[in-house]
Image 1: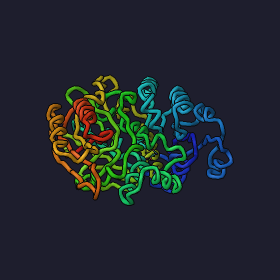
Image 2: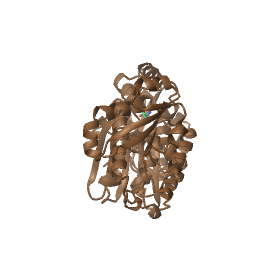
Image 3: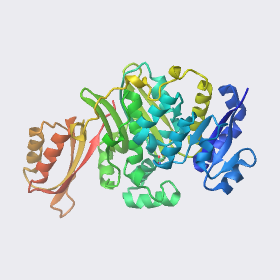
Image 4: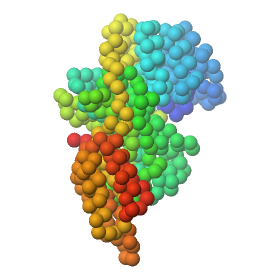
Length: 436
Ligand code: HSE
């Protein structure tokens, strides 16, 4: 059988892993794909490194455009990352009639609509299993395995860096900044960790999942994004005393009025399986009407786990290479002309439960004032924790868990609580999801 020829753009961690796994498992992969899949061209700025990996098995160039224009290449694998050159390369590959496999979540979350439309027009595939949760086949599950279902919500731990930091903060009772430094030293966090710790990377992934789950265009600009940088060790401790863990969740939820799309630190019950996903591991919990809850767990990053997803896409594309474009699995799970323009709801309209921590003077009537304000805002209290003041202290912490409430009502109540003379400083608000 004639081999399918792949052009690899970027032979760093994931590209190197793709080369290794494809070489190691070549025989089985060929038996699955129906024809050999071979990387015949590699583009990387570091040509010496690329050459040392591929030897004489593929041609090496520093010019990625040379690969996307190469008439012998059937599939381009884009592992460069970022929005600029990567976008030009992907669009050029599509224009040249090549299928594309990419791990680039940022590119698809921001420019996916344009890229998928271009691919649709050209009759080529853009596959992106590696873009969300690394080696976990969550795109396959959402797009194909759960296709009978009306998906209600998705909640995912989809950033390993932040999950590692949160696990360490909880385990060792350390502050965010100290754990971040340690994570950087160990190589778990990048030198510039902004995208991870500010929730942007998780929001890219949640955006992609929301599109596939609900049949809507990708709308990263509408996502609410809050990272873990302001999280305090004391909140992790209080959450634990109340039976919860704090995780950075990417959430996409169907509501009557539209879709909630949000990333933020979230209290989740410690007894849920997903609450026990620790370290750099990822997990995605999907709630659908027919099957109920399904949970997908595994490595969300790293050379071979991500290569596993890249190669799965290569096999899929190889199998469907000659198929009528109209009979392929649609990019966003729903037929391109069947996407809905359901609005992504502003964070003010989100409904969830809340953890509220406030520092108060230890005086008669303080709690009554606070609960009155919450009742006025139609916010019902689910649990309450009051720490006994330490010896000689005049102030103490009150922690409240609310039932489901509308975010703007909670914010209004917080403003009123903060204006009480007996409340010291700001109220800390963390959203809470029961995930049941
Ligand atoms: N930086 C990501 C993480 C991996 O920490 O999970 C790639 O998406």
